[in-house]
Length: 374
Image (cartoon, rainbow, N blue to C red; front, side, top):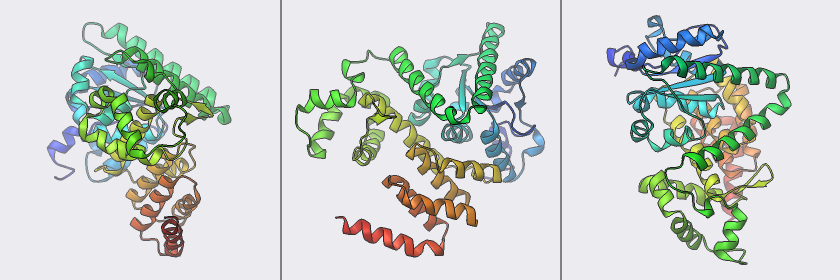
């Protein structure tokens, strides 16, 4: 289908024209444009700059370049959720890029929570789980939009303060995210959390396996699926559970439950891993490839992120952009020395996809070492 077709244009859900480094970017479906225009007006009245769509950019692949640039350069990403937008491929792509770019995400619901959750896939549902939802309704729009604008302005003010203390910014944001995610899980879960949901990984192991220090993967998998049977079924479904278990098999080779020198609850870490994996899968299969220089630069910055899942997503995303300039290739080559196996595998795949001939000898050496380890 042509990018200039009426159907595609009608589904382009993003803010793309406006000043660089705007405060707010809004992802939405065209069916909700009237409500979004009211939201935009209130945000501007609060002194915030907002990216809004314009018909003069609705042609050619340049659309996606501008969309990607807008996602990367905004400070706050607002996702206006309706039955149309939660099923929009473009909105899914935008949310995935905002998530891996660690943007402040504000989900804004135009319909009931249950209706929206029923329309989302597992990836979107989990990516939004760590963020408080806001509502906008016709009857209570004035009070609801006031609260939303106040929260957005407060978030941006905090970001500006953190920019002045850049060495503390990453730690503060991640700590806030973990606390919010745990609070959301406790308060908004559709079922009562069992005690094991809040047990850290060490406590779960001790209570399940006793003093044994090693067990076969098949036995651990069986126990895990039994302990969290309803959780896996309700959260992921059978097909995605099988996919996620394969990822966990690989990730559990390391100290899976330890984050920032703290042992986390096992189920909480499984959800974190699922969010990252869904985001990685979504970015990898994007139809709307974001190839602007701004996005490439941002992805290169993510190659040094402390989260190895984010590093892997950034590597694959760089390969998808087709950027094989010397600086990008050099940065990806450096990732071959990362301790995490997933990051190294992503770098190998990326260099192969980009057909980097200078990397052949290094890749061969890596595979020789890998196979000799068995």
